[in-house]
Image (cartoon, rainbow, N blue to C red):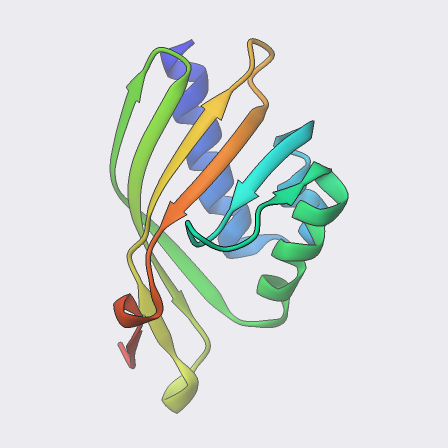
Length: 123
């Protein structure tokens, strides 16, 4: 299961960078999954709410880079860099996400650890 979880994390970051719709990313989630991004914000529940959350990403140019990943049992914690936008509108953030996975490999929960103070402007 560890290899499958790692592969899903890599696929997730690829989709965060390249998806053309929020539904593409939400397809990695179980139907009743939850998403809390950032931690402390209202949780989104189910793939419709999760797809709507990610839809915003698809309107901006973005890249991702996996910095570290750790898998234990059916959970993964990973840090990564997201650069979005261009020029003066560019922002950089390095959140730490924690995901849990079902036996079928779908994400059952995702919690993203970051705050607005962690967002940098420019490259």
